Length: 291
Image 1 (cartoon, rainbow, N blue to C red):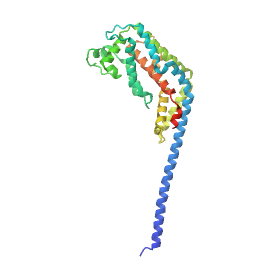
Image 2: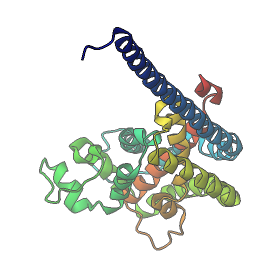
Image 3: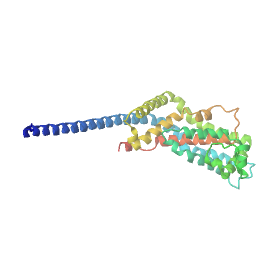
Image 4: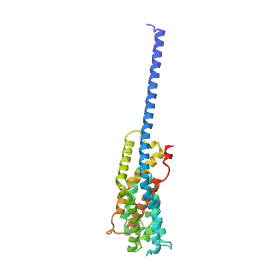
């Protein structure tokens, strides 16, 4: 039976209308998804912005104490009146060896300030407490490879770093304890600001954890805004740092602690990271994130 031209035309029109309807539906669905994405992203941005504005004055107090980590420069001047029995001083002031060591360690940690996770970096700091001079440092001084392949900062796997470590080890126990006490006191002074505002800071961290979880579980990601993601990571890393084992160890009573060079370096690197986190937290204009 021949197909009626009119019927064929009607079928063609119906088919085209169906295709057009499907395309319109898909476009509408994509538009709704995009609107939902932007709305959700705006909500996250506002939540982060609110926490930052509320918490900034508290972190500013800490930053004023820590001077962006440069408080260690003043503490290092203590070494001007201290001598080391080490043969590796090379005529340089002891504070230079101290600065070279902790700054080289921090260079390896610097990305931890804006990193989504800090676990690997924190493990490196903890490794400083496990250094055994005879087994880990002494072999390097004589050009040998340590038997224990201990994982720590790169600088301490070099002969140059081992020499600087030996210089700190050559300081008398009394002078090492004096230097360490200043590091602890500075960290404790800044940490006291946390204890005063603990309930607020813990609450801000809880709110950020909700944003972080929300960001990981659905498709509405703050990662789509590089500036916002960086700001969030800095905030999260700063507020969670107060609960880190390294800071807790540093501000605890240490009367029975063996203050060796590794302990001093652990305190210095922890304090420096504390200061740099606080500095990054308060720096910049939040309005730039809106762009």
